[in-house]
Amino acid sequence: MSDHIFIGLGRNPDGPDLPEGLGMRLMQDQKAMETFGSMSKEQKAAVIGYIRGAHSGEEAENRMADAVSQMSDGRVQF
Figure (cartoon, rainbow, N blue to C red):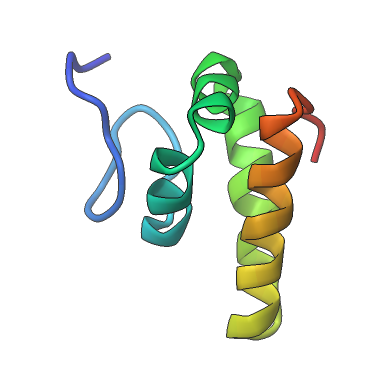
């Protein structure tokens, strides 16, 4: 595993690429960021898959907001 935090663009060797919008939202919510950081690679992949499964940009935005809200409350099941 690399010693830098991967957020956003490019190829993440340690798991799924984090959507830029999700990274920005996590940076604005410390509790959600801490929860995301403590999640396994599989749990992180599930969050990212949940967001990427949206059928429109608006739905993706709603799913990101929902995911961050859930992580802020300490929930990690997606």
